[in-house]
Length: 178
Image 1 (cartoon, rainbow, N blue to C red):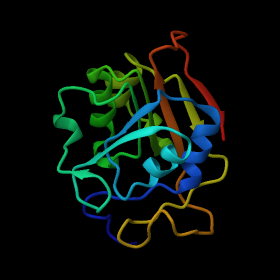
Image 2 (cartoon, rainbow, N blue to C red; image 1 turned 180 degrees about the vertical axis):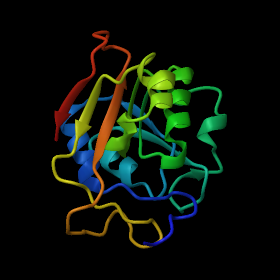
Image 3 (cartoon, rainbow, N blue to C red; image 1 turned 135 degrees about the vertical axis):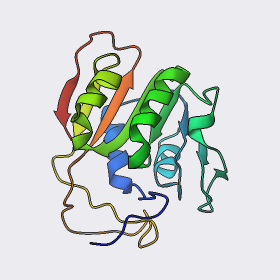
């Protein structure tokens, strides 16, 4: 098995964001804090959203050198991203602490697991909805392929969009399939 990409850059397949936008709406301006090559931002813009695209690393698309975890103010009330998996807990907690009103995260379905995560995130701020991909995504390392390249095959990892929405006060997480 190949080593992980050093900066945890795995571009989001366009179809993953397309599926999210079929079931969720966001404010007109959306922050993408791990924008990479713009895979999510491009789809958002194609759907009429204005994006504020930033990334810690420079992949030639957006404002580079912006460390999301060091930001002290939110750049928009909505956020959509595929964060570095090794920092996913910290990213989600930081968005909550910044007061982002609606945020969606492309994460492994296994993000639902773990006692520490349960107590630090889910028990105090449960997501509004988890959208499980019924057909697994194929997500390649950013240094192997870009998000514009069509790929075939079935991925080996189950993914889902995890959505937090301050306007949903039901306290119950809906799990559904896309």
